[in-house]
Image (cartoon, rainbow, N blue to C red; front, side):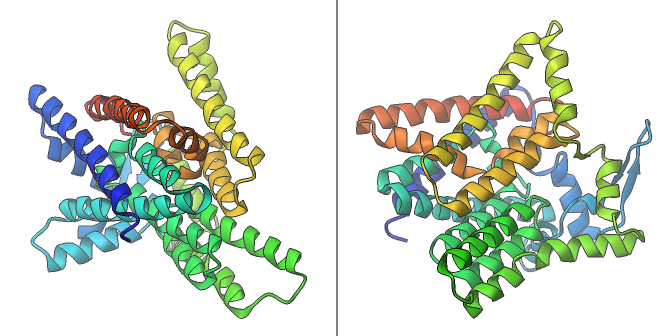
Length: 365
């Protein structure tokens, strides 16, 4: 923990900067920064589930049916539990969960970077993750911080051979977001490769970790299936929101429409962004990053890019894929200290301004 303290302080500093810029922007726009963070879009759905349980459905024009069954239960459970023992509303409990778990996520991310490339790289990795353009989500009553903390610690446990912890944390990640499947894949595929290379019967703790990993994800899918009376119940619920997986066809069409119209700069920006994240992943593969990081980051990236639905959320959906930042973190770590600090500070400032701009828009992050 002592070794990680500087990284946690840097993370906290970047996030405080983001909140300060948001507060000033909200004051100038006569908006409530607290409401922007805790009571809009997905935050409202989580709070409703925490306060009233599942069962709310919103029917919209065009045939879309928004059911709260689309939201996994771990965050609402924590909001309900904290609001029962502390003088907090469910929404404020969600903010507390995000604040604590974002620090826990930063801790695991630092340990991963430190283990692979040294302390400076671990520090840079945390700073870059905190300063992502969508980093403001880490301070919202959303489930991204909770999920990233569970996923990052699970992957770190795989790296260090703590299989039961890895499987247990993967199970909890599977109760947090559907992309918990990426954590399960990291545990399963890495275990299979370790077993195959070892040529011996796998250890009991490894088998237990492998068995535990998918339980959270499977439990919620099964519960929604039983509640809706359909094996594909959760997929049907997501379909009601206009979400699903089509191999990236809808996203490609969305980008193509903008490239072919007056909004071509936006289309070009999207295309550059996709090329950048794919290049970062390919760089990690070429450099031989550890298998659990490649599997986890790759599955998160694949699911984000091949999903249809609201395309404005894609950057947020990729936020948990912190291994993609490793090539950038090692590059920053090689800079002289003054240049590294200036680089990260500039990125953090741009991120803070973009986050405030984003939350003052009409569409959800």
